[in-house]
Amino acid sequence: MKKFKFLLVGALALVLTACGEESKPADVGASTDKIEMEQQVETGGAVTLIDDLGNKHEFEAIPSSVATLNPGMMNILLALGANVTGRPTITSDMKAEVKAIQEIGNPHEPSFEQIAALNAEILIVPLSFQQFAKTVEATGMKIVYSNMNSVDDIKKTITKYGALFNNTAKAEKLVGQIDEEIAKGSTKSTLDALIVYGAPGTYLAALDNSLYGDILNKAGGKNIAADLPATDKFPTYATLSVEKIVERNPKIIMLITHANPGTVKEGFEKQLKENAAWKNLDAVKNNQIIFLPAELFDNPGTQVVEAIDYMRGLLKTAEEAVK
Image 1 (cartoon, rainbow, N blue to C red):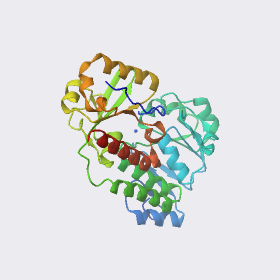
Image 2 (cartoon, rainbow, N blue to C red):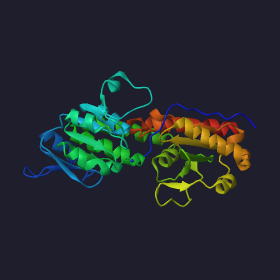
Image 3 (spheres, one colour):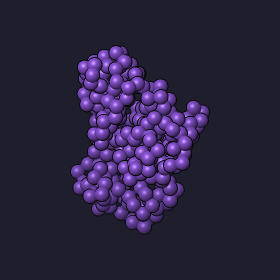
């Protein structure tokens, strides 16, 4: 059997305005009417942002400072010109402007001391942060929840915060770039693909309703796990059934990981060696077992354009390998 080809670039963290009357602030997120949102920003009126838990947050002016524990949200905020004063822990290489921002941990291990010291106006977090909410809210900081579990979610988030930070023109441009990238893959590939989420001792198959399954679809791929039953705890993932995988014989297997990439890689390699069934897969025979790079797939935000393009390239390479 050929030597496996792993592309390991870094760890991947998985984990997810309308115009009103003068006396009534606009709701960012309550309306999808782009024109109304633009009118609200132009008049300089108050804005009420509705976060992804349905909470309403009123702002009399553009927030002067914002912090986030989500890498994708950080990218969106920076692209929209927001004053980002706190960022998540990032293990991959960073641009100088990102490295200079105060690190405040991750959604599972936030640094409450650093968050409090920031004194930022708002903290944008994933839904899983609710367990820590009271601790942060006690400092007077406003918590805003964001969930980007699909490419459409990312587009809606860009539009929503483009209105909040008075940069709807840039938001429209970013959304347009995503739509253009998706349009390139309008012809679906017949290549059978599988995306595996790995954590130490746990391996799950990404379904179409996960962000990674959605990126695969937008890249033109065919997800062999699409119809597998979702797990109770993780409804966007299915149990990794070796029997089903062998039966469907994926031509490419892509792995993502929340943390400990070395341990996850080692564990998956062990599975491949110990279960002879894996050896017969075309993905194994053709060295198409690949770790997805963290900087593109760790809550990609605006980089979802590059993520789709990257995955499309992987599919093309795998297609050539099986010819």
